[in-house]
Image: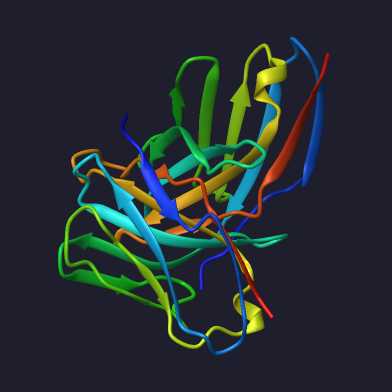
Length: 111
Length: 114
């Protein structure tokens, strides 16, 4: 099967600082990589995605970086807020439209 | 309100007793999928459907069945549940018009099999 993993299971940041969440993937046949946010007791929520032929994509306060050479994906959150506290999952979509998720990183924002 | 609904939200059952978890979306999405979420393992895809009458196995399909007779509904069937199917289950849907299939998730169904 596929392997999508995260470097750190937990991350704590001060409010206002930038957060960086990392993810390693192993499948080279994926055409999109996606980040999801999951708050306690809820289903995952789409944040941002990036196509496999891109290196960087920016959204509102978030940036996703893709390094295909080392099969590494990262999510940067600018000016982290208490509402950003959640579990973040990376996922990859294969060309067959299957999805593989990482194990998640728990982000805690310290006021 | 655009949403994905699942029923029931919580279910406790016994080994071998057939059960169905329903999933419905009101967004006219073509793509629907089922996942299970277990501690330390993230979400794993069970089955997915590209459209009506089209279903495919995901990463962990053993012990599950699905059907897609209508576009809005995608029920998950456990013919003979076992304790290792105790998990949190999520249904998701997405339009095929977007390139990455941005998925909208339901609220989850917590299943316990004793």
